[in-house]
Each structure stands twice: as C-alpha cells, then as structure tokens.
Image 1 (cartoon, rainbow, N blue to C red):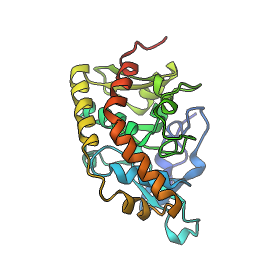
Image 2: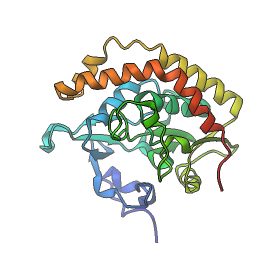
Image 3: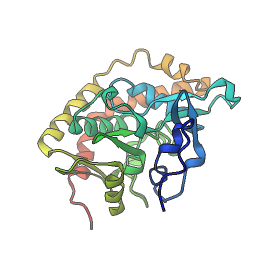
Image 4: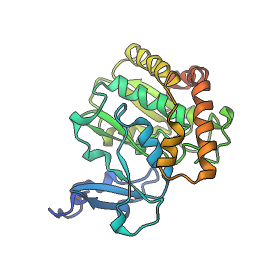
Length: 259
C-alpha cells in the first residue's frame, strides 16, 4: 500500500508521504495539516512555537511558523508550522550539514528545547530542518534549573540521549527516523572535527547575542503580559549558562550509541 494519500492538485498537503507525518509513537498526524498560500502547514496551539521560530529565523534551519490566518476564526494562540519537507533548499540559511546540526543543538540548549529527536526534524537535500518547540521555554514543566533540563527520561528526546555520529551517506527523513529506533536523538554529521568546531562557534555566537529587543519580541508573539518577564528571564539566564551547559552536553553527544 502506498504511503501517499490520493494526490489533489489543489491541496499541497496531499503530496506528502503519510509515513513522514507521524509522531515518534507512529501515530498519524495528517489531521493537523492545513493548506495555505499554496503550501502545507501543521496546525498547533502554542505560542512557544512562534517565539522559537522567530528567535532563529534567518540564521538557522528552523521551520517557519506564523499565526493561524485570521479568516480561519481560531483562537489567538493557534499557529501554523510550515511542513519542513516543503522548505526550499536554497532558502535554508545553513547549507553545510555540520553547521546545521551544531546550530540546532546549541539553539536548543539556549531555549531549553530538549526534544531534538528525528521525528522533530526533516531533511531537504540532505540538510536538516527542525521544528517543534513545545518542550522549550517552560513548556516541559521546566523551572529553569539546568539539572531539570538535563534529566533523563523514557524516550529519545531527553538530553542524555542526544548523540552525533559521522556518516558518508546523505541523510534523509526516513533514514534518520530509522536510526532513531536506537532510542537516541541521533544526529548525523559529515565529520566530527568540523562538527565540534561548528558547535563551539555557535556556542560563542549565541552566548554573545544581543538580547536588547527580547521583551518586545516576546510581546509581538502575543505572550500574556505575566509571561513576558519569566520567559525573557529564562532566555537571559540560559544564555549566561550556555557555555558551561554546552560543555556538559558534549559528554552525552560523544558517548557510544547503545545497541
């Protein structure tokens, strides 16, 4: 049986393989797909998705997020996430695999997005485009304490299960998700020395980032007034802690993959 739904020329979502619109438990998520402006989008109800995107937009390979169109008549916190498989390859800010992986991991440390497994990532021309910031920015019952973020758990998204591995083959969405069966959030890189250099460089970039407009950005994402301060405080705290946190996470990334 084909993994593609019947093709409808008027609906861009119909050309996507159903096997790639699943969560990590194998549940079909196509009911959340929505066509808009000739593209396919995924409907979500978290403003953290929008803020996570805007913090990385234009710098890293993060899937686009917008407010849901007003004509849909949905609550204000509904957003749409561009289905990563439809991203234009040449529009990606990072065209090097090592850089793309390093930036995603460092960015995830900064916004406290622990869930970096392969079902929150798709590949376009061998380059990863990541999405899903639902565990970030206090979304994972996170109290802002590093030890809470570094705790282990029962799925591959937890930080102690993050791994990198060099591979000559061009990664695809399907191949990456098959590797995820090891119960690790496994990231394929081209070679380790270049990856580590990129990782350290991104730590420096994010740690030195100017956050003077942060509160205005959070407000522009329609966060309630009583959340603007705590979210901005978390991001500033996490930025200060990033160099030390990154060194600790390196120990996980380098561990052998359990079989």
